[in-house]
Image (cartoon, rainbow over all chains, first blue to last red; front, side, top):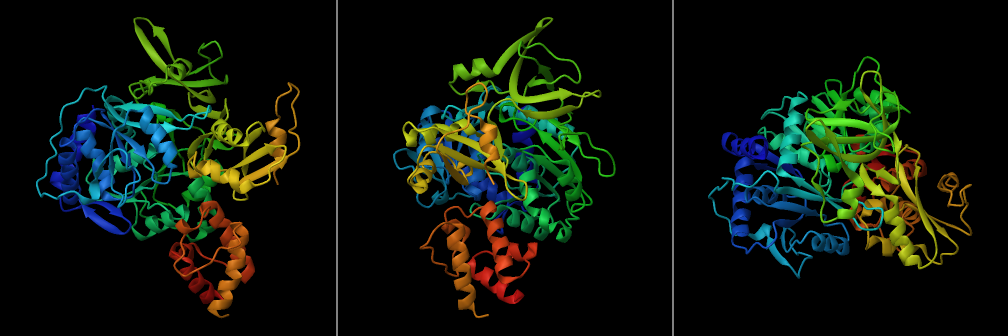
Length: 497
Length: 79
């Protein structure tokens, strides 16, 4: 699966389109030939190492070497564990320890990871020889491990196998996208986030060019610049990015866009109706999926001149992709019938074998159902959903305290855990609130007194990634309680102006 | 309005928005140099600048603002 749908088509691109552009990074173009050479050099450097763990740490900068490293790792049969340069070092080190990473590939001029074996990919001896023949690896070998926020303060490592990823890309093409060497595709997601994998694999397995998003840029205005200046034809975006563009919709006309994918969070119908006029020639698809089910697992196509199904103003997440089986269950894990709300669970080849070395969470989030002679293994998404009359899935709400901030999945409990640790005894509650353009932000309530917001924020900055840092801290003498005697999160939320 | 005057008005806005009384603006200053300068604060910043100078930015203007120097140029061109 992985070889057939990812490695072989990619290698074919590098041969057939060697002079075409594979990447546009920070306004600089790189051909497939240059990419292939960079991959080969990193691969040779990898082969010179004594590899103890198959999980290779990859510092995900926005440059050719970082993307090349992904393929070098895959061709060797290993998996990458993305480490974001802007994520606190302490968090990266924790991730590395958890996943037994002892070798890191880093394109930074000065690597922060001094204690480990580091391949400095930007200063490798360059040899012209292209060496892309893949080593064979089993289908259950890992392709990557991506960490998601964990409610108990520890991020969870989602292991994705070569089979998982190969199955995803196969099903993705079966939705009906026609991409070729003339396409210009947007890659505006951090490599620590799995929508990035779809965003670079689509162009690279078709000989097209990927336009990436540099770090440290104001995302919404930069994305607009890429779409407009480079006449992007295909791109996945999160609705929060689109929301920031809303005040300027009357200026936007991206007629080059053929396919636009909405991913990473629920899509508000009214926003997408307006947005669709900015991309008049594009087919719009809304995709849904947790990292555990490999990027996306359900989708619906947006109907431009007509009715679109929605619940609470959010677009229906549609039907499962090929190879995915979706059910909605009650608390007793019994499948519910149409129009009954319950937890959405998914099974199929895209489902992760589980969280890396975390038996407790694996027992909690995965379960098996016997159907005749076959056993299906399901992942519980934590999303409260129902099937409508036509079998389309409507997303109602979360069953826990997981929220989406700028498309990132955030467990409010993880922020609270670190805040409480700093506060040593005082209570802290994180909630989301919407700012005037409708996007979600995090506010942190602290009970009692807090002499200095600054110190708390500085502490959080060394523990959690930038998108998890609260944009407001509010101190309350006493937290309101609900009828069951617990902190009333809704009452706290209502205190935010 | 002179550049210096625009700069001092901007300094007041930046310092308040990023809660940093010692923030010194230079032409080369970019989002990566200022803690908390992200999409949300950028949007708030733009709104404050628009109301302080009674101007309105286009999305194309925003896309051209690579640093504070560009920002000042664009503001002056709109006054």
